[in-house]
Image (cartoon, rainbow, N blue to C red; front, side):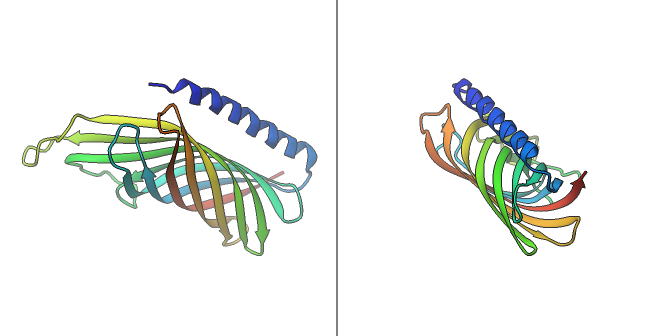
Length: 208
């Protein structure tokens, strides 16, 4: 598996994001906000390397953290890390699974510039992710046997991030983030479309 080129790019991207965030801190004395979010509903469109068909699913739950630094009256820089999953039920509960099931997970790092207008904010920027698709089989004595061996495939991708948020009040907000991924590292395909779309609930903490 050719994942090392993507790993090197990931380190470069991470260093760049940290440098930009540090620069924003140094140049701005305006508000800083720590945003803790739950990507509650997640839609996946993935094309695992070697699979004949795209994998599409919608599920629930995830976790995100974002540092927001205001650099002008109506704009702020956002540096975010998140994980989104397709957990099958909308409540945190044990689920009995039988037979074959697919699972999708996305680990993302975003750098965005955001504009505020009233209660709304609109952003655009870059996203680097590791998208994972997995096929598992759970014992089912009365059901169909597995059609193939279990498999887990993942790839690192570079794309864009477009977050939209609506402030319910000073502490809580609702958001939607569209992440189209356009280039995958370590695969023959190279340029190939994937996406993750998340509807989020967030708690905003103003930092001193």
